[in-house]
Length: 161
Image 1: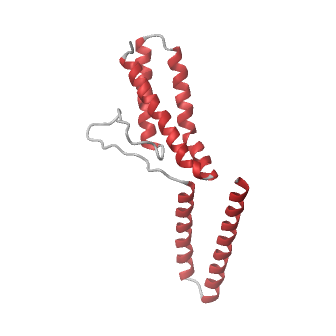
Image 2: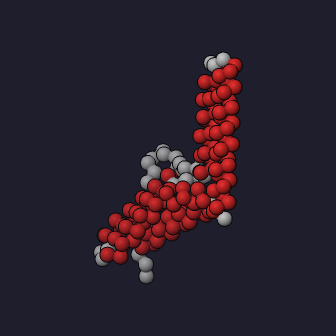
Image 3: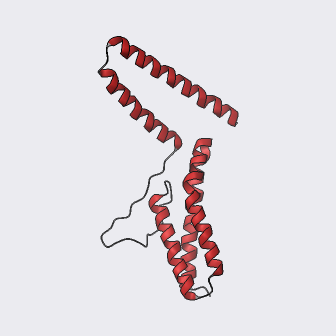
């Protein structure tokens, strides 16, 4: 017969394992997203391993109850801060009146596109204050840099296959 603490611990552990697997599944489409998924999930995986080790050594119901609460807190943090984690975990650490929040899934390509857009806007603002020849040089340099970046990512993709 399983205790309440065991059921809570297993439910939280199952959620965290599934969240890590989901983030890895989202990152499997490109090598850069896979690397980002590994980096994003490393702290969660490390914390879960430490909890598992403590759980195996826990001999009293009081210790297991405390570890179940710690596992639930890890699941809460995972839902709140791990981009792409499933949304079906019912948080246990909500304050009265607090609304659940969750970090949206991200990708390396999406972050790169967002950064490029920001830099393009900055270049546009800079170019608006320059003369005609300077604008042409700035735009030409930006186009050249863009071509080099696309070429570099293309050759990386071919080597990865």
